[in-house]
Each structure stands twice: as structure tokens, then as C-alpha cells.
Image (spheres, one colour):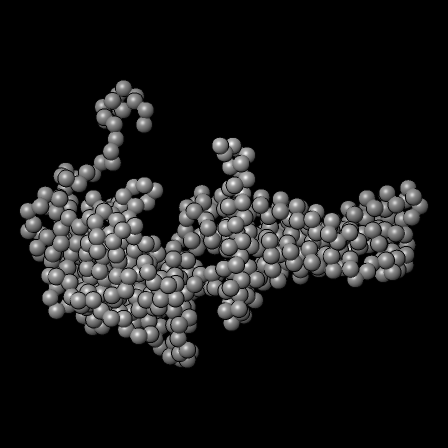
Length: 282
Length: 253
């Protein structure tokens, strides 16, 4: 596949190539606006963190980037190509250059760990069996699960499944790696391992990474650039250090995990007292 | 103004159109999917071999009941020797393909729908798409072909054990002459009777497998969604089997 022509570098990231460029995107589901005027970029070789409270549309953003859905307005470009205008063949060609770690791992349940990691190699390459074996074992060793190669997904813990999924996501040596909530439900050891792996792969292989999460502290330790989503748009952008000292009330609320602030903790509801004591309908 | 019945018709037509379009997408992926024969053989095993016990048990008892009822009826006319022909024609042309298809819809169809539906609910299909692998080619087409190939094979088994059951009850228990039972069957059953059953089983195989994979692929990704899709598979398959059976029978007669 030929390398598509790259767009000019994004402002504020001088010298960096923009790999993912989301410009002024509107998107809604069932009449409810998820994004209105969303704009952000992810640059080559950098770890870009996308943070935000639950329901802010973080996973939807990944669906837009991977061309699973199309924006109603605006443009999502990956390697300079508008993903909404790509043919099915081109979308698949683009996806071969990216890897994605799903929140739940999304391992294929009828294949064992080894075959799960080997799956993209078998589908997209003509490599010999010894070479596939060597590559898969190398990736499994990197995530510490070489010994679990013959286990089925049902026999793995949540953290192990996530690590296998990570091995599968990188087995094709992608240029862009997308992580959807990689830290959810991990014990401190698993969390540390995943954090270290994300950082190592970025540093050693120069993989462009987009990490979607609401784990502020973990992200702050590895991200080069952070975006905070709320109300369907980016409410703050900068390095984690910049966000930490931001004066913006919503940024301060999110970074400190405070339930009181501009971002409501409670879903809109009738008066608490009226509902609890007067028996008002739900 | 659109009435409730119009709306029902419109929604039915829309669904028919969606299933037809899905079939077109499947057919376009059949040739590439044939490049992975192991996947298809595995699905023939899943849909076919794993249904064998229920098919053989049902076939035996269907043949046995057919013999009991047939013998009772034919004895009134003094022609119980024709039991072999009656059982063979009923099984080959009608009961074999129809009952096999109904059993297939209940066992293999529900299994296909829930398996694909759970793959949808657990993001496995999305993960394949992100890995640039078309789930239609890798997951759906092998299961569809497995069902289409398994159905006539299961029908043949059903017919064979059904005849064995009819012979067991008619000849061994009710005392119908063994020679008449087999010789009349041999002389009266024609190739077109076998063909009718075969064509029906192919049609039911395509229909049941298509409904099962369509419902699974379009499952709402929740536990309730998988349950509803499985129910829709059984209901739609069962009703359509009987409807299409009537149409095919009318065409053959």
C-alpha cells in the first residue's frame, strides 16, 4: 500500500505530522448531540490522551477515527484522507496500518490465545508458519503471556485478556495504535504493565498512540498531548502539566475528581425531596 | 394515511428487502470464503454432525408413527402392503425435508444466531473489522454455507432412519409382509420424488441458514437483544418453512 500524502502539521505541534485530524465535527445518536464542533489532532510518534467524563463521547470518537461511523458535519482525516469519503477497500487498507485495543479485549472466543494473536498475520500475510510462531511468541512474551499461548479466552482474567488483545493489536506493527479505556478494571500490577507497554511501544517503535480514558493520573504520566472532552467539544487541550495547572473550573473539577463543578455528576432528575418523600413518579 | 395493517406490510417488505440485500452481500463473499475450506468444514460439523442425534431420534419415531397410522388406515381398505410406498413417499417428499428443517431451525439455527449475536455483543465482529477482516467473509459465510450443505445431508439421514422406523413398526410389530413393503416401495418411488425432497431441503437450508445468520449479525448487542434475535430466528424459520413447503409442493404436483 502506498503512503498517502500527509497534511501540513497542526498548529501548536510544530514539526510534527498530523496523523489524525478531527475538524469541526458534529455527530448525534438518536437525536442526542454527542459532538458539536469537535476539533483535535493526534501527531506522529506522540501519545495523545483523550479524557473526559463518562458519556462524553470518547468511544464514539474512536468509532469516527476508525470509520465505523461518519460525522454529520466536519471532517475526520487519517493520514490526510477523509475517512467518510473512503471506499470500503480504502477503509480496510487504512485499518491495516492501525491497531486497536478494545475496552473488553474483544478476543475471538473460538480461538486460543496464540491463534488470536496470529489472526491478523494469517489473514493479511503469507508468512511461513515458523515465522508466524516466532512473531506471535515475541509479542506474547512482551506482554508476559507466552506461557498462556494455549489458553482459551474464557480461561483468562480481564487483565490477561487485555494484554493478549494488546499483543494482537501490535502484531502487525501498526503505525497508529488506539486504546479504548485500557486501564479499566486492572489491578495495580496489570495497570503498571499496560502503562509501561504503551510507553515502550511509543518510544521504541515510534507508534502514534491515541489513548482514550478517564484515568487522569495514569494518562498524565505517559501522554505528550491531552484533550479534555465535555459537552460535545474539547474544553481544554495541552500537555498534562498544563492541564494540571489550568484555571478552568471544568478542568480543575475533572483533574481533581470533584463531583461539584460545571460538569454535573447527576443525570438531570426531578427534585430529590419531592421524589423521596412525596412519592413523585420516577 | 397509513393504517396499522399498511404499516405491518411496509415493515415486512422492508425486512424482506434487508434480508435480500444481506443475501446479495453474502453471495458476493462466497467465492473468497471458499479459500478457507477448513472454516466451512468446521461449520458443517457444527450444524450437521452435532444435529445428528436429534435428527435420528426424530426420524425413527416419525417413521414409527407413520407406520402405525398408515397401517391402521390401509388395513381398512385391505391394502396394508402399500405401507412401504406410503411411508417412503411421505418421508421423501414431505416429512423428511420439513421436519428436518424445523428441527434444524430449533437446534442449529438458534445456535448460529446466538453465537454470531454474542460475537456482536462482545465486539468481536467490530474487532475483526478494525483488523481489516470482513466478518461476513470470516464468520457469516462459512456458517451460512455450513447450514446449506448440512441440511440435505441431515434430510437424507432423517429419511433413512424414518424408513427404518416405519419398517420396524410396520413389518416387525404390525405384521405387514416384508417383501411387499420393500418391493412396492422400490417399484413406486421415482427419481422425481427424491428430487422433490432434495430441492426442498436445499431451499430450506438456504432459508433457515440465511435467517439465522441475518438475525445474529443484526442483533442488538445486549443480552435481551440476543434472546430476541434467537426467538425471531425460530419463529420466522418455522413459519417460512411451512409457507415455502406449500408453494414448492404446489409447484411440483
